[in-house]
Image (cartoon, rainbow, N blue to C red; front, side, top):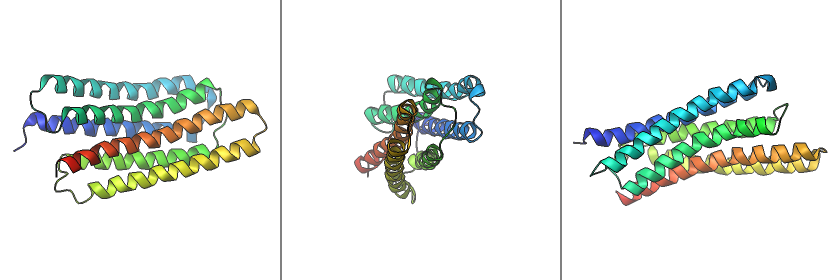
Length: 207
């Protein structure tokens, strides 16, 4: 029988993945109805979710430091916690860059990339939910493969968005600004894949 403290780790992972998904959904709402005049207020709202994610991360690290026995290796707990926290951080950083570069309108390419980020976050949430039962789960490995596929799709969208930016835009400042935003969106997909990779490694080591 699993100890309560074991379940606490997996519960925290689920909470962290959920915060990342909520952050992506809020960012999508903000960009779908984009108003540069509201950006400062919206940044604060998004940062509230990021702070919630940080609280879960701190709780996770406190438990790792305190517990004599952990359900999986300490290094894996720490690695997964950091990756899940980084997903939320990277999503928040998309809006920070939009604010920093004073972007006035959102491109269709950005919305398409953000949609893929959302799909990645949904699958990460699904994988993390199944993580405590990975030996019996019939879906966790399929979802990890799907995250890998979505990350590749994100890479392709990133390449095409960059090509369009550098062949169509005549404004060098706009090119610089959107280059940074596209890089940040692609980074969100990468971090989702990194979290899935940590879980896959844990499964391999424990089965």
